[in-house]
Image (cartoon, rainbow, N blue to C red; front, side, top):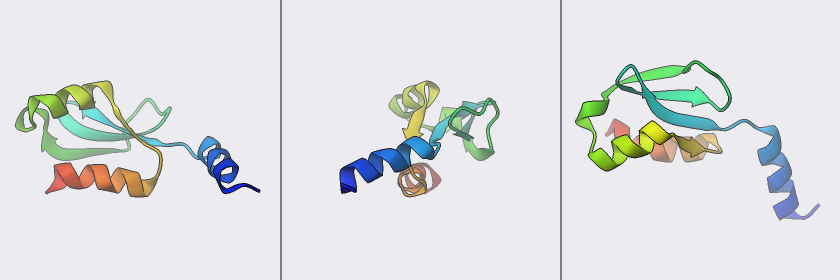
Length: 76
């Protein structure tokens, strides 16, 4: 099977992740779940305005690796 087709099929089967804001804190959802699986001790008001706007809209990560790369920006 073509690598590109395999990747598309794999992505279709695996739910992604959404980073956003819940109760004024950085939070993580499994894509499609109504409740966050993790709420981090990072307050929304400590983040730059551009980051707050992106998080209010939701930042999608397709894989755990991609999620970790995004989270590293906020957890430092």
